[in-house]
Length: 508
Image (cartoon, rainbow, N blue to C red):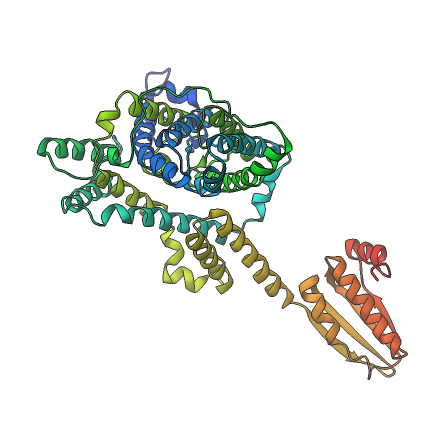
């Protein structure tokens, strides 16, 4: 972001002009009027477009479709989301997560059913967004978010390893030179994105020297024409819906989860807020548009988003739109030139993205010593589940479930029961939150057979959170009655009292 620049006051004296705030920096109109910002957006979009090409081709291979399907999907996703999305500067395109979900349908029923599933997935995302699914983001703990980010960094790195195995020896010095540029150039200047400099310089060097190294063209044939409208040739019957619905639902959920968590990550990087609901239905609209152009659908991409936002400094929708538009121009009009870009350079850029994406602070010994072990365990579970399955949805759900279980265990341990004997009676003072995890333990804290005829259970220091607790209290009273003892429950107030009055005696 530019620093404060001098401005001329009416009196003729120089005054400081305040630096633009992050919110102002996100204004498209303001960026269009600021050449320095606009140049950053354009260059960022160009770098992302180049980085998208081999990824889109690779994801097409995973899905079992022609490379142009992934490339056209990346174009339509990026351009559409730049207009309708709720998180400026975030990149959406064809992704591996979606490809993994949809691949079995391509193999079993072909392209037409596959495209129909993409369109239905987009419609499901729109419906889920309007139904308020984005509110579920509040239930994802920070440790799961950190695990999600670290797992993605690991997956991106692992995906680059095959490009460095069984290749000519020249690949290694090329990759090393690219790493030197992307890591070192920002220390000298940020006027031009370091990844773009690495691509231009090392591609020119490779062509000049005539080196025979793997290139983008080796990944697949680039399209030579613009995408056209595509209407899937499937029968409009319930059987078709039965076939595609499970794949569409899986694609919709995976896409929304990855997109919303990536949007939250960009929010944190830029210190700004985004409209998650708009982003969710925008993803749906983008998938519907992509489907009608024969694309494979997609969602937000954390790797390319990191290049755009963190590495290149983009902040507006301009960079996202340029990424999509430039991708189409590069693969259709300049396909021969783009095809000669060495894969070693792109691999180096993605390794840099891994380094920039990974939350190194989360694994520092000082951080691990300060954090509760349960927080670290949740992060580790999220990372392991994501990396093992290559499925972000499974990783995040595993992390959330682990967090819930550990939270319930920790809170349950805060319940205390203190027994006090009187002349001809006994009182129990219960303190802490009572819910399914803690109330089940509560039933074993009373001495039913030896307590006198009158027992008081004081709950003034406790809170009743669910029906399970009321059922346990009813069971405690019943067990005391079997021994001829009267158990009185006292001290309830507020919602706890209302819940007990409403449910006691009605739970069987």
